[in-house]
Length: 275
Image (cartoon, rainbow, N blue to C red; front, side):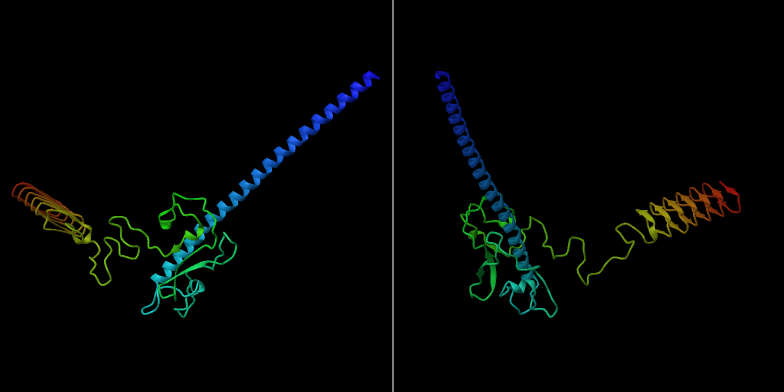
């Protein structure tokens, strides 16, 4: 009888410990579930915040595009957001924005508009959410002024022209070396120190038809070579003031014609050699 009572008390104590362990396990699971829910909500808001920055940038670009493409004498800001989707200033459909996006923080297109001083046109917009932003620093340049804001209503998206570095030209200006409309353009093949026809010349009076001339020489026809004031024609070679024609070679003051060789002041013709 005594052993039976002891067994019953032992089983009762085990049941109490199991019940306590169950309660502790349920409490741990509840805390973990609550933390997971909070992290999930924080993650969703972070994603919505990134989407807000992306959509806000699209509105900024659209407002800038609307302003940059304004016909003469017409307003540079839209009166409604729908005018960014279809610009009424042009007879043909002109789009600066694909569609009027919904505010990712509220899920609706309930943007708060920032109007011009006369209250007629839109110069910017911001979200209607008053929640505290998660991101407080390290914004891109196009979102300058968003640092340390206390609510999304202070993230105002306006048309921001791109910031140019020192010496950088605006996107629509002509680049360096590109002539303006109506400016004269040099002829093809012309360059400083160069000659027409593809010839190469260094301190030369002239080189035509692909010839090469050095010093004060003159080279013409078929890739001739002239050095030191000589004259070369039809592929000949002339050095030191000589004259060479039809592929001949002339050195000194000689004259060579018809593929011959002349040295000193001699004259060579028809396969002969002059010295």
